[in-house]
Length: 209
Image 1 (cartoon, helix red, strand yellow):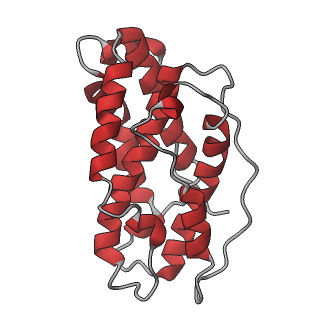
Image 2 (cartoon, one colour; image 1 turned 45 degrees about the horizontal axis):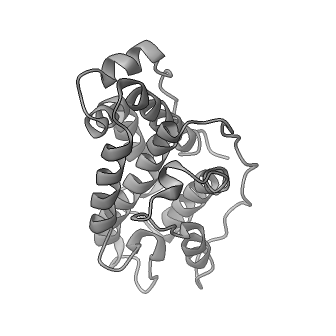
């Protein structure tokens, strides 16, 4: 496996509590994850100016290795984002596997062993993790617009996502998160979950040589 991006220092609970104080959940999440988000954007396999199917295959493998353990973990809960009727489950892993199985796609390594996630995580922590997963679809839509002609005829199913784009689901997610994550303690916990989700994918993102 290629060298991965360096992980930023884990924020302390004091830092997260300070971020959470006097602001709403989404503003706090953006602030808490800004540096990680910027680092990931520059480290994605598809961030190279001349992205090819090789880069897309590497991107899919990275996201697969990140999402698979997260999906298994999140599906073990029946509250929080998993109980939100406005956010029906999306089988993103099936889209990834279909893309990887397309003719002409480079082979990728088998999935890495699953990372472990806390079985006693609060609903707020899981809202923070979901914030990163749902937000990744916004970035995917941008990449789809940039790459669908260059990489045609590959359908780029994972980047394309749902019909109509990710906007309606993202708006529903933001409204649900704001309604369920409100207290400073909940917001700090959500920020901790979001930072952990970013750190998990940063550990898989290859350094661009």
